[in-house]
Image (cartoon, rainbow, N blue to C red; front, top):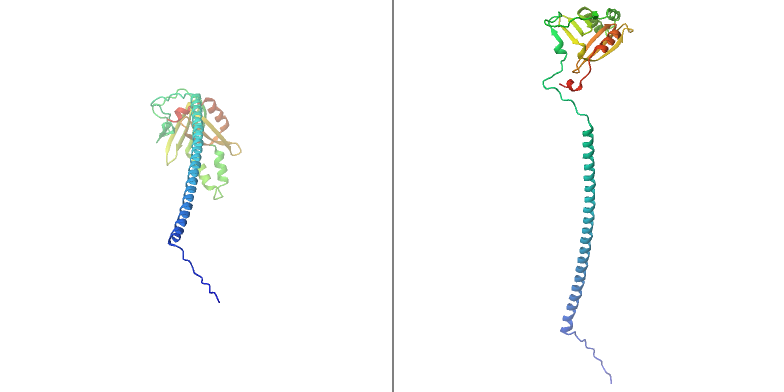
Length: 244
């Protein structure tokens, strides 16, 4: 007798099928919750660290500002001390102005200005520029480069003249282009510089007035003696009045 076994497949119940999605959902929810909790913890730590960093930055910034404020106070104190140590400048007389070259110039004539009263004067030098300048420049006039210098030297020799006394320095010009005379009191001169030319036989001289303007005397004979004379009788510089 042969026995035939039958195999029967038992289908899962509906309750078992329904429980599987619930378990998966619970597992997913738990995983999401854990991840959210981890994220919250990480965010909290990051915020705490950021807050600590901000506090540290603010403290450093405050310390830096304090140092700068301290330095600023020290700088102000130093500047105040230097300012207090500076000598007090003399008050400039109101309405007073130092005279310049224009105030000592007479245009249109080389005669003594009307109303000028210099009193008794001792003449140190009176005459034209050094004649040696003309001779030297004429000797070099064959070169084109030297020709303008020769013309200038001849013009000075013909139309210029100097008069140096114990009270003033006078420069006279009878040029066809401009006739004038300049009379500068020695007390209005604060500096004089002379440079030798022509192997030291004559020299160019520049005198500086109290207001800073300059007068040039070209090809002056005996320039060293005249320079010493002017220096021994000239005035003193006044920086405050020179600005007026």
